[in-house]
Length: 107
Image 1: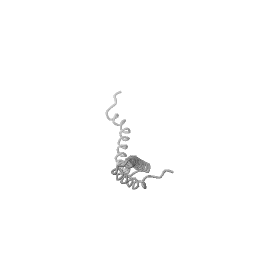
Image 2: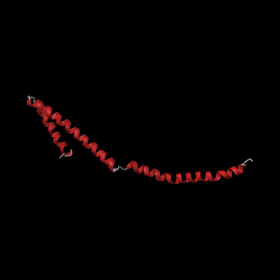
Image 3: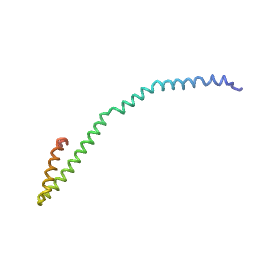
Image 4: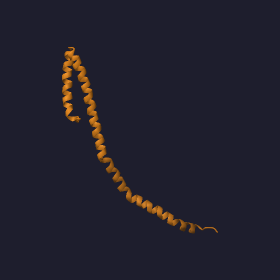
């Protein structure tokens, strides 16, 4: 028995209708998915905000540590009689005092 093209087409109709229905659903839901992605890209989640805040705090702490090491070296040089080191130490101390309020206090 040979299947005629008409009978073959009838057999494929249920499969094709599912494909067409799926394509229609994809077309209808595409704008919603695109809008959802745009919202995700433009908003910052709480965890992302916490990570950013933590990075900024670590950056300030590193800066404070570097300033403190520089200040200690300048104080040693100042104690040995270097007038330039004393002036630099005062400037570094001022920078430390300006940075201190933005660095969290450890108990």
